[in-house]
Amino acid sequence: MAKNSIVRINNRITSPKLLVINESGERLGVLSLKEAMEKAEEMELDLVEIASDTDPPVAKIMSYGKYQYDQKKKAQKAKAKAHSVETKAIQIKPGTGEHDLNLKAKKISAWLKKGNRVRVELFLRGRSKYMEKSFLEKRLQRVLDLIAEPYKVADGPKKSPKGLAVIVERTS
Image (cartoon, rainbow, N blue to C red; front, side):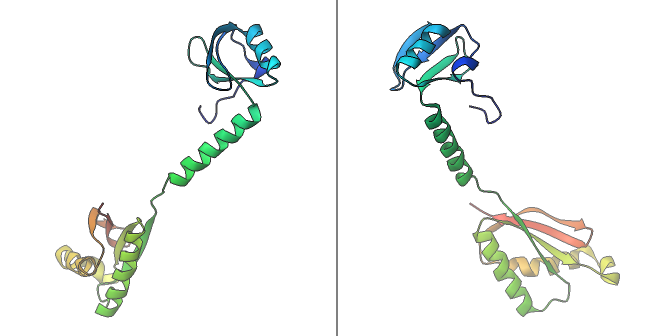
């Protein structure tokens, strides 16, 4: 059932004929709305329209509170399984030393291990903005060569507002 759709129960159901299913999942057949309501009242349960887009609509005789609880649990499970990929960013400069590059490469490896994408940016100021692009790419490649985790270049190297950037992500 869609998240925004309204669930019709009991007297809110508008269709004159319904395919009715009882609480245990047995089909009771196509019944009129009045007959379906009477059966639900006999069992002291609710009549819940579970598929309004079919012809005739499908309604189930069940406890509406339990139905809501089950739907909420399904939504929570789906949300728990969904993993959002975050893009982390790290900056280096053309003159960054080897030790600092090693530290930054370890940080990048840790982020890649967690499944995040990493934007490695070569930060350029002043005259360094006008250096030869091949030289700057070699400087950027220095840190990429130190990354321990297997990765692939998703995008780059490209000019960015701050200098030269490349986006790396973990290979599956």
